[in-house]
Length: 530
Image (cartoon, rainbow, N blue to C red; front, side, top):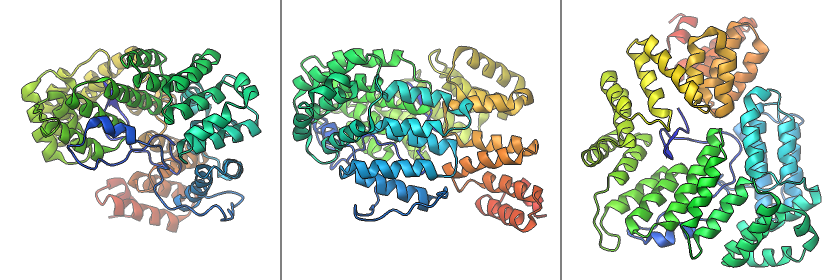
């Protein structure tokens, strides 16, 4: 399970696997555990999360007519285009991104990643182009809606205006020219009068240059023109958090949370923002470090999260010593997601002694028991972690009931979850596995809420293979491979596709690959008569 959040805490590690990236704030490592928390987030800068060396701007891109969905091809072409964007060569980057969208082998997951990434850097026409390529709207409708609600301006921009604003954005974020870029932009009074996004970029430039007063002026103009844009509200909260009344930023966050974003990806963005605002508004140093560690966790920076939380417990911050149940609980969660299970057990036990009714602690303890196949013990913790505002404990309990062969009880829990929560993708998924009449629609509902949920794609491939809809099966399995090329199930079902096409050697090769990745996988063993 990936990307699950409980009260903002990720229940299991969400790892963005794919060929494109989310152009969001990345973070710098803590130089020391006893550094003041007041300095930490201020050093966070958006950078290229690829963290690879891209080709110089003079390099010519040779894009095939149909770019293969491989890490070497699509990823590298994207990296080159993004590098050009970072260098403020936005016109060239725009052209490269467009060619990539037009030429990749059709893949709804890839299109959605491109749509989100393009919107994130203000290339909305390209985002819309990527969305227009999508074939299966049942799977992509939720994420498409979240992208538009979160990012899109109220009025469509001309391509030349997008490119211009992209250059300004690039200079603000990546080239340390925020003051100069903002000063240049505000001279373009016609564009500012016509575009809410232009005012957002101006506000961003002023904030990055330390002029919060002007930043607030321009973000208020942007919100006046487009009051429902969540990205604008996010920046407004960040501006207010640095003002004289930082607590008011929490009210903005609460307003954002009321505009429900149903996809896992965008729910995580809101959780991340909330932790940043809490970090900025807390006075106590240990609380600040806790929320900074929480922010890193929401961003899937697990090692940084662990170091920050350890620092909060070290007693080296302003000479204060603290045994804090919340810090221990989150640190236990981080250790578990890092597969450091002994540390997770020890840390969770410390938290449990201090706070026995905390759902975060109870869920970690339940996960540890579940991992050890102590399902009865796990169930006790999951049931104690019940929370009317979250579906996570109930889903974990239902999955444990299944392991205890209590299918009827599990079904009752899933049914209750679906009646009370519209974003419980794992409930849709598990019901789909048990009810043949709901297989396809419920698997698609699960993926609509979490498109990176690999198991859903694999099971769609399985169902279509069983129905002998081989073209559809191939499409879904390609997406699973796109997310994780080392999943043994992909190779097994790919082998079945080859087998049904009469390609015996290819089928046997795929079955063997499946067994290399999982030597105990019985279906693949049966296919090659082991």
